Figure 1 (tube, rainbow, N blue to C red):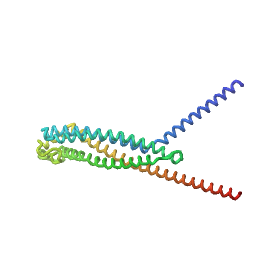
Figure 2: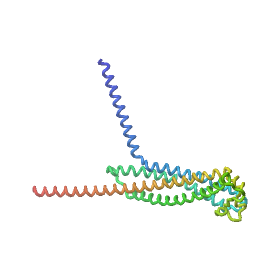
Figure 3: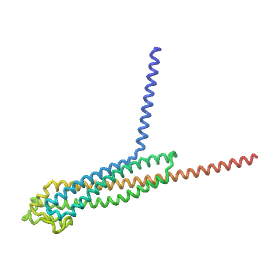
Figure 4: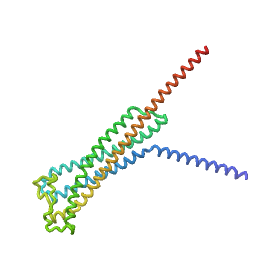
Length: 289
C-alpha cells in the first residue's frame, strides 16, 4: 500500500499539469481568435474573389470577342485596328487592377488587425493610439471611397457587353424558335457597326440569317457571353467588398477617436484629482501647524 500511494500521487499531479496546459492552450486560442478582424477578413475574401472573377473572366472574354469580330464582322485588319489597341489596353489595365487590389486588400486586412488590437488595448488603458495612426485610417477611408466610386463605374461599364451579347443571343433564339414563324430569316440581322465597335466601312459589319445562327453556335460567342456575365458579377462583388471596407474603416476610425477622447478625459480627471488631493493635504498641514 505504501508503494502504490506515491504512484497515485504522481499520476494525479501529471493529470493536473496536463489540464493546466490544455487550459492555457485553450485560453491562448481564444485570445488569438478574439484578435482576428472577422469583418475585414470577410471583406478581403470577397474582394479577392470579385477581382479574380472580373479580371480573369474579363481578360478571356475580351480575347474571344476580338476573335469573333475578326472572323465574322471585320475581316480586314485595318478596319478593327483601333479596337485591337483598345482591347489590349483594357487587358493591361486588368493586369494593373488585379495587382493593385491584391496589395491593397492585404494592407486593409493588416490595418484591420492593427485597429482591432489597438482598440482593445486602448479600452484597457494598455496602449494609446497616435495621431499618425488615426490619420492613416482616415486616409484609407478616403481612398476606399474613391475606389468604390471607380468600381461603380466599372460595374456599369461591364454590363454593356452583357447587354450586347444578350441582344444577339435573343435574336438567334427567336430565329430558331418554331413559334416565331419567320418566312425570311435572312431579313433578321445583327449589325455591330451601330454600336460603334467597328467603323461603318468595315466589311461585312453585320450578320444575317443562317450566318448569324452559325455565329451564335460558335464557342467564342458562347464562352464570351457567359464570361462577361461572370465578370460583371465579379465587379459587383468587388463593389460590395469596397462598401464593406468603407463601413469597417469608418467604424474603426470612430472607435479610435472615441477611445482617444475617453483616455484624454481620464488623464484630465486624474490630474484634477491629484491637484485636489494635493490642496487638501496642504490645508491639513497648515491647520496642524
